[in-house]
Image (cartoon, rainbow, N blue to C red):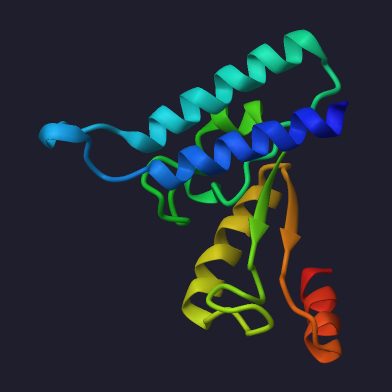
Length: 144
């Protein structure tokens, strides 16, 4: 049951992250990063009131760890406290295509955020989509 709830939260968070953009409808300016942080914090508060063992791990939402979206900025402490980790797909493989190495510029940006997450006590869960033996072994090695 816990895994079903975790999966449900992951799906909701992933869907909302897709909708994030710089400005709202009719020229309205919004801070969508803060909106998402607030939303996750509300999910965390509600979820932990129901089950204190529940874990909150946003998927592919590492750029909202901080206000600006730039990994060189300081993380938001309230948001960090509300989550237990970050999930990241396509870290080393499959950013553009399955079983293909992630471009180095994208990889370095994502790794900076993963390092930031670990430095702030968060677990990092990754999924690479690769199938050739050499790429699977390389993914295991790099993720370790």
